[in-house]
Image 1 (cartoon, helix red, strand yellow):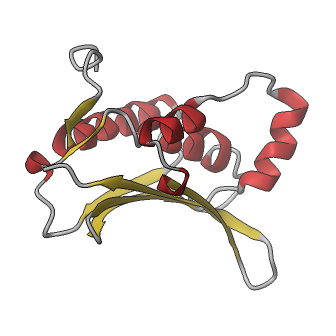
Image 2 (image 1 turned 135 degrees about the horizontal axis):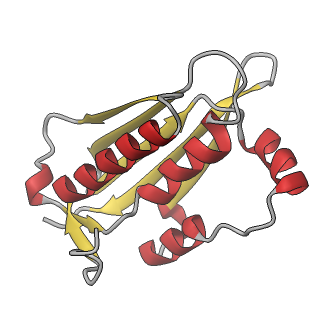
Length: 156
């Protein structure tokens, strides 16, 4: 990570490797309390696409810390998917954690530090449509997690 810290962009394969390394460390740190998967669409060449450095990490971190680890029962799953659509690389980060509403209630009671990762990443993309956050609900309106959709122009 430090080797690339002077770069604003990296190859997608490097971003995926850094994300995997981060996930492995967090999994160890938290005693394997969550599972994760990373899926890459077949027509994507991760060695041929440039992306903003660490554009996925803040969303993965939020999913783990504020969603999955606060879930008291059941499996904790984090899915990351990379695909292409209409000249864009689309990365989806989806968790089945407690959801943003419940997390913000907990955070307001005990967590005073303001997170800037999402704000900074959105500014780096330079487009408000580049980051979409979706609260997932079941048929009864209860939270069943959060989905973040990141859209990055393809740079090959």
